[in-house]
Every structure is written in structure tokens, then in C-alpha cells.
Amino acid sequence: MDEVKTGDDTADPAAARPQGDLTVRTIAMPADTNANGDIFGGWVMSQMDQAGGIAGVERAQGRVVTVAVDGMTFLRPVRVGDVLCVYTQVVGTGRTSMRIQIEAWARRFRTQVREKVTVGVFTFVAIDDEGRPRPIPPAAPGLSP
Image (tube, rainbow, N blue to C red; front, side, top):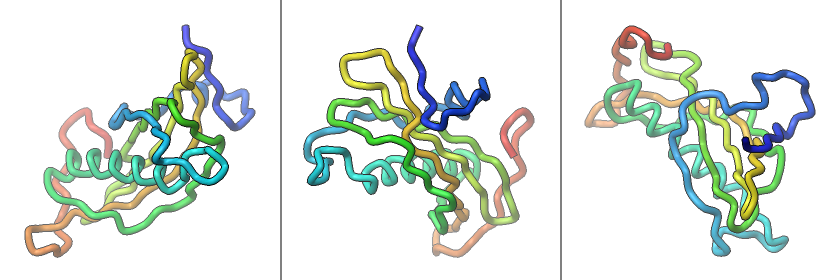
């Protein structure tokens, strides 16, 4: 079994497992590092935005754009060779917008240790072909909001 570290020292068992659906999985490469040798936070944020966009398109059944990022927290660094796994969960929808909770977890290079590294809530708006907001269809039975 994988060793799991949540990055937030809580005893909450739910915090020990990723929340949501695995949406993006990629490897951190040397070109993505900062001067300290860690992966740029902006690279991690970009992967999270892409994952949120995928989840948003599925929920909205069409194009979406990112309009806000709330509560972005970088818990631990990501290092070269780590596999970044990004999980998404739609936590609310309005008429044209939706909030998606996004967690990034790193599977550390050469180990089975998995750590929560970044969390945030992204807001997306469904748009039509002209780039104007459009209504989000009702959720299919059994799906997130």
C-alpha cells in the first residue's frame, strides 16, 4: 500500500485520500524548475487549471473559461521526477458558472509515497461559440452538482 502524507497534519481520514476524480497525470521535468530546483508553483497551477477545464467541459457539456481562483494553497514542493496527479470535483454550479475543487498530489520519484501538494477552488464559466456566458445544463442523475 502507498504511504500517504496529506501535507496538513490533520487526523481527518478523508484528508488522507485524494478527493474527486483523477483528471490529469503528468511528470515534473527539469525545464519546469525554479532557481531552487523545485517545480514552479505556476506550473502546478497550470496543470490544475487544465484539469479543472477538463472537468468543467464535461459538466457544462461544452466550452468553459477560468474566471477565478480562490484559496490556492501550496502545501509542499514538487520536485523533478515526481508524478503530479490532479483530482477534480465540481462542488457547486450556478446558472452559467461552476466551482471546482482541485487537489494536486505528488507521487515522489522512486518511492511509493504520495503527498498532497496543492489545493484550490477554481471558478469556470460556460461559454457559447461567440464567447458569451451560456446556461449550464442540469446535472445527469448521479453526477456532481
